Image (cartoon, rainbow, N blue to C red; front, side, top):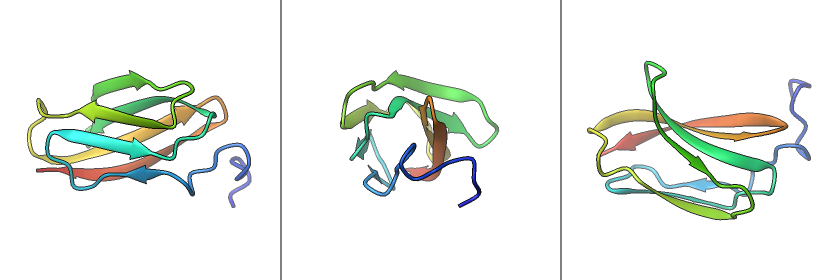
Length: 88
């Protein structure tokens, strides 16, 4: 623990992010602390942003994205969590 994110504030242990993805990015196990899901290119350009406040699962249409690696970022008022995914 690096001190700036406590597990209680931003718990990602229950989060499942589908990877690799084709047309749909499925994210399950979101906690109430997650308010937004964003997808970025590796260069940092935002390609998708979705408000997920109060939802425990979200499905994002990524069929318009070209194949390659992307970063999925879960954001909340207490911090954020990022994971790389592969779009096929």
